[in-house]
Image 1 (spheres, rainbow, N blue to C red):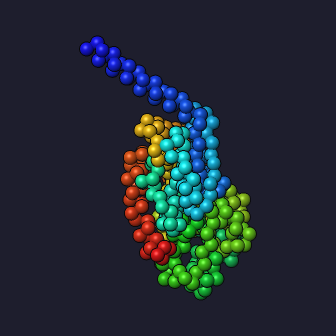
Image 2 (image 1 turned 120 degrees about the vertical axis):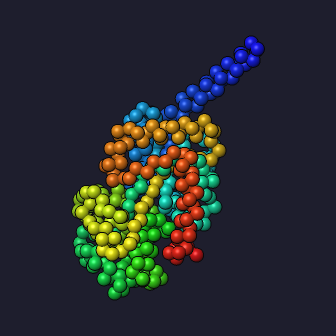
Image 3 (image 1 turned 90 degrees about the horizontal axis):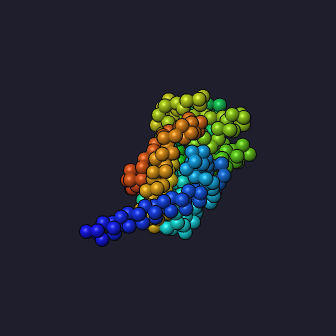
Length: 321
């Protein structure tokens, strides 16, 4: 009996020591991949998570790396090389789930990485240059109906929320997609810059990516793609104009496949604690993000649902065959 008790105590001590060692090793080595260019929505969220964890003392010096391209699938392919590594996260979201079938990526987020948490969502807005000929939504609709191919519509990468918004708008206006122009970009900020440079006429993107440009009055928000108006944004919803076009972009974080159960639990708990902090709540308010937090278990179920519905939506909208 004494031997058995001693063995149990030794096992418990070893397990506890291993857990403490893992926590200590990972406490200052967190790296978050933003599979987009600098300034995009994924980049903003990656830095928001890193800054909040650092401010709370839960991570000493978290780093953010950017790997842009093809709706995040370039970053996803790179992330697969981090298999089994602790202290690694990647931002993901609607754009990547849609981008996987569009770009023929062989991966699924619910299967090939480790879901950690859903975090935020935001609705797209339609933006135009400050000097645009489109002063109202009605002006844009009239132009699209008169000559659909003459309006250069831009936004996210192919299959992203901007592309979905473009397709949904075409559908409610009964316009053939083949006659219209969509110009993809690596992120909302890139699309907005192209808009300012005269390369596009209207862009659909998340508000947080372009709020600085709205504030300095270089672009205008023409409409909001949500059920209700956004606080602090002086623009009507498309639904107010009789157009049922609502597009929301959700974002979350995943860890590599092959991590230990201990590491998964550590990251899950780390984020659970983070989203309760005042700093995180302030970040949500500052960026006009909706709080959509889900833990690792619930987020995996949500990803499975998204992966079963989004490809079908893309087919219905003729975005993929």
